[in-house]
Length: 561
Image 1 (spheres, rainbow, N blue to C red):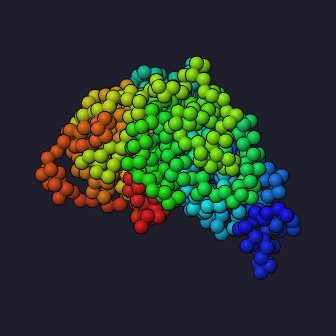
Image 2 (cartoon, rainbow, N blue to C red):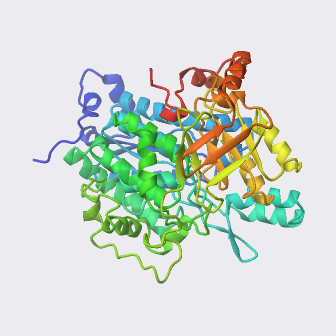
Image 3 (cartoon, rainbow, N blue to C red):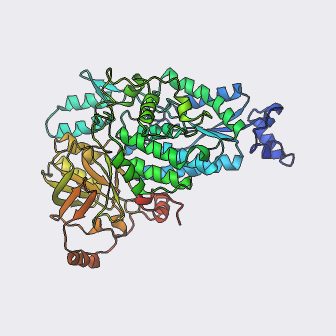
């Protein structure tokens, strides 16, 4: 007799005291036999207004059809998404990071209240991925995540371009490097169809982490959004979710301290987004795993940077797919003893077992991944900096291309808009440390991601001549000498609130320090004269978020009391 796998749904479907529930399930199209089958919540972040997400309904439809073929009941569910690219540089970006919590809360709510036995989640854009991951950890019932996949590259003058090209084009236009006509052509050709932004930005970074952690099927992070392989992955997911149900393999069996460390190492090797810090801390907290900023720093110090990927490099996720996909990189790093291959995955096998038929990486026919003996940089690009400016930690993305030490005079802005205006009107000079403050999780509120200022700086040709620091955060597409996540943030009286124009700031990525060069007596004097600004928001979701959210150094979670 086959083992029953409808352990949760039977509390409704096999309970004769719930006639109204049964009546409503009949209305959805269920037949009598279906009442004894396992029910799968097929969650997608589909919506039409964002290329990262606009194709996810088609993927969820494939998953539902395969679920039916595998004698399961699949119910498709939608949750929200926020487009980082569209909201970037506007007040709408304040909702991006907070949307991670809405996504997690909404999935938890539906799956728990409807007693579904398992989850197949299909995220697209940046915050979708950690949002669904936090949810399935909380639920801790058999689950698989299918990444919506990366976008194809655009083309302009025989060069590959992507979303970051459009941001940097504005800086080039404003400094006369390209014409308005060229500017328009770059914008029109940057995003040719569906899929998440193509470089090692936040979406691809988090997808690569989750595949390495084992909560996605092999190749999920590198299968392009419109590929045949992505469709095949959707079909396989129904087979594997049934296997997980039969063996009662749950997310907390897969997401462990070891698998999280594997994910961080892989992302740092590839030059992943600094946003991984916020999301990994939040994921670890959901799984009751002890992880803090110091753990991430220790990993980054030991792991080489070997990925020649945008934004600091040349290539895109589609190029990783072309050389054999992420598994060939994972296999290589296991062989080099950087990753642990014994972790369990959603196939029911270990990473090592999944990799048996995966070929070895060939360093002679590609320039995307470097050998660890000849890395781009001997240690990771993510640096956790401490000092009088950030006693609770801050996050820097230093590839070494922009140097390792920067000292300059502060030029202070109390909003991103003020900073963008100054950059676009050529008011920034070499040697300056731009300070953008009151944009943290409580101060903004929402800790908006900033790509405009760094893209404008790079497009203007100042990337190697200035630094930018903030209590906010940067897009995964950011490159240059930048430090974000400064804690405590300005809104709660962190040192960044007391900086004045002309103060000297030193950032040292060798010693991992960030300091403003002021006497303690002067610092105390400024503290005493400082008054916390009133909250910018008086009601609504962002107001609630600002009251609940933890520090960036703890992952900006909203359930830490």
